[in-house]
View 1 (cartoon, rainbow, N blue to C red):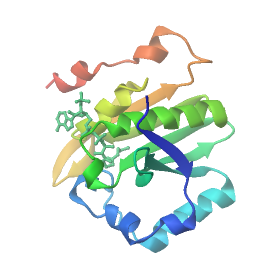
View 2 (cartoon, helix red, strand yellow):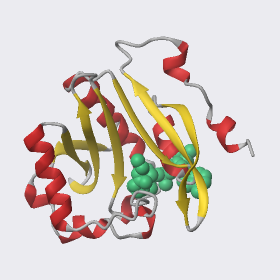
View 3 (cartoon, rainbow, N blue to C red):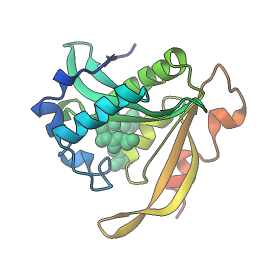
Length: 190
Ligand SMILES: CC(C)(COP(=O)(O)OP(=O)(O)OC[C@H]1O[C@@H](n2cnc3c(N)ncnc32)[C@H](O)[C@@H]1OP(=O)(O)O)[C@@H](O)C(=O)NCCC(=O)NCCS
């Protein structure tokens, strides 16, 4: 039973608290490109997604108190290929460490596949973002690849882990369920 539900955000949700989430230490990997998040650029991305119909900002709401605690960004959607990136962000630090990203990604998968009829979701993260890799792998996502030494984090190179999720009503093979690498393949190898 999911502890969260998703609802599309509106402009009013982009308040100081929402913007403030983006400058906490646990977002280091999220903003690994050293992007500075401001209310203006967050709203620009939000409005552009609505205008182009290719980026959906779903608020993650905690069921027990209806509090907005994070966001699932489904986008940029490529409608030709019916694929999209999907990012999860638990912004409210009080709600970290409870496995809620798993619940949120499951809800996001549901929106992407059943509502938007997408074929495949994908994403990538720093290898050290283990909480993220683990959360995705618990929700039917698989590891499709590794981009060696793709990033520089505090002057040390780091791999990018490529994850993906295939619409289970379309894709049913072993590959689509298991991918190329297990978690252990990646984290136990040197
Ligand atoms: C990634 C993120 C969504 C995870 O949120 P969360 O639900 O609070 O994750 P948890 O802390 O419950 O951790 C998930 C799992 O990883 C494990 N984990 C966390 N940090 C770990 C570490 N350093 N080493 C090993 N395992 C770790 C947890 O034990 C948990 O495993 P379990 O479910 O088997 O117990 C959250 O940290 C976040 O929003 N980060 C910023 C945004 C981001 O990086 N998004 C992903 C990029 S696309």
